[in-house]
Picture 1 (tube, rainbow, N blue to C red):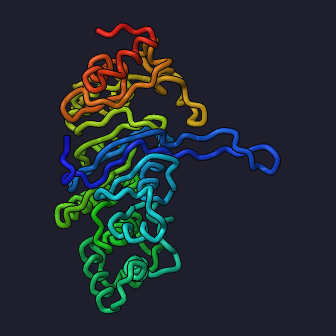
Picture 2: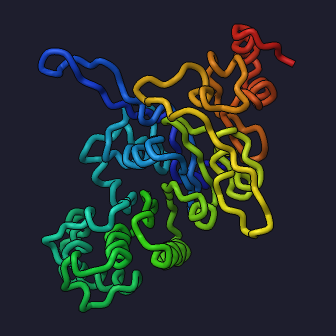
Picture 3: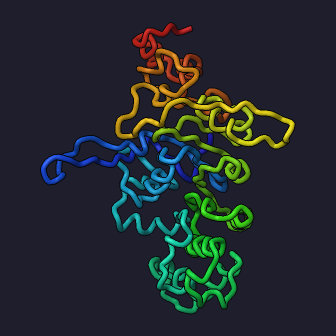
Length: 350
């Protein structure tokens, strides 16, 4: 496992539930949408941790909850050993300069009435940089680093292309010299040719400044190219975490296996068998019992319908939440709890 010095961010049992209101005047909480349901992972300094999954799996909500743009329902978020979940607004404000976000839509995330210079400068004002000359110097410096000219700083966002607008968003995130940047689908709205430019820019900036990224995307090809380790989410839960070579070379969870089977082959003569999942994604307001993936799983067992699997390290730096691997992984890691859990479900422990 990673030493504490190597870990920049540690997420423990993070939950984010949205209430569904009803009744008279809509004040009664009928049930909850479990957008993020008890996820845990670590992000090392200087690495890029990817989060992938289908639309609606909770990956963007997880990123925003980590930043406290959304208040967590439960769990802990340790950033450099400080639990962000316990900080008040004043304390959290001091941390925000170290954690920044690049949003998915490069146009909707920029104020259309502000010049580019003012958009990039604004975080410095918010974080207390009072010297005007210092702010101008840093805006010009970061603009040059992301490929914007001084003349472009005088323009408004609508005068730029999508790729240029995303460069503005990256510049705004970089200006406070953060340690962690959460990139929420940063290239999904861009043309393929522009995607590569933005991704290469982010890679170059990571090497230059030692940045750490959480990269949220549904594009498996982009994630394979850009990320070091990857977490696969399904219906608000993290079902597999592994290095990119381990995950793409040998996915363990049936959902990850089906997801990666959709990737096109790198050679036209190499034919791949596509795994087609049956059924629809269940509602996060009423998730299935046991393993939430069991209604669509081609390897479903009886225990999957009643007992929730635990995310366990079954190989070196390869974690999976699946009963196909729990009979060995769980017993080794939790020898007291696991046999009882499985005996209650009527499964023999070997």
